[in-house]
Amino acid sequence: MTTGTPSRPALLVVGHGTRSAAGVAEFIALVDRVRFRAGGLPVGGGFIELSRPPLTDAVSQLVAAGERHFGVVPLVLVAAGHAKGDIPAALAREQQRHPGICYCYGRPLGPHPTLLALLAERLDAVLPPGAAADTTVLLVGRGSTDPDANAEIAKVARLFWEGRGLGAVEYAFVSLAEPGVPAALERCRRLGARRIVVLPYFLLPGVLPDRVVEQAGAYGAQHPELDVRCGGLIGDSDALADLVLERYLEAVHGDIRMSCDTCLYRVPLPGFESRVGAPQHPHHHPDDPGHTHTHAGPQ
Image 1: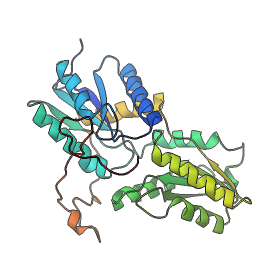
Image 2 (image 1 turned 30 degrees about the vertical axis):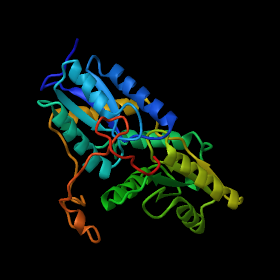
Image 3 (image 1 turned 180 degrees about the vertical axis):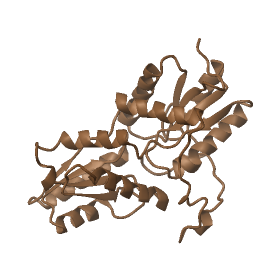
Image 4 (image 1 turned 180 degrees about the horizontal axis):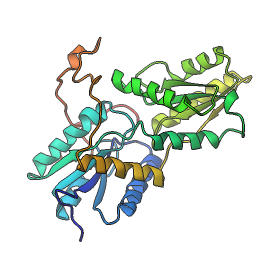
């Protein structure tokens, strides 16, 4: 049995959770892929809410196998509430349940050249050759009450525009932030777009990515003069698994380069001053022994 040590901790992949069976299955497949590519490193994965397996089961299994040190990678794209508060709070609860364990915490996956390359593949899959210059891309993120996280979607959109010869790249959100998908598509139309490819900036299937496709399809049906297409999700792949391992290695080697300059828990951003220093609490997973309520909101 290969066990983690302080110099080579076990890898723990933490997802938010989803009501989508396809999303759960793809998360499990990605964790299995990471385990295969990790070359004998102990790897576990679990969710903080909504889906099985819960994080507490993943930790318990690794602890039962003799692990006490963990490199944790949040399987999220941006540093919003899940990465900044919910997952660390859930990990703190696991430390109370398993005295003596410790972890080093990795940063979210994006933005990263690997993700931009995967997005480009999704775009190429729905575009005819040579059509980039006449195409507007609408990058759609989840949306957050964290302005820092929303700003990162704008950054990714700009990075995706650079050097690809696209007509334009706009951005939108499917929940919690504006512009929404229909409003952003209308902006694209008014700016002269005739072909629009909607790219969901999501890792795996879920309720919200499905909503992006539904809203894009409805807008396209209302505007038959436009060519509105949807690209696929980033999805389970060797490239994504290797990015998880890269974030793991950053964490265990102490090379964490996350910027906290615009974090609403550290900086009094206008309208969010009350969030500075706010305590963080873990979600309550329905399969966790400490579960007391059901968290609302589709994922």
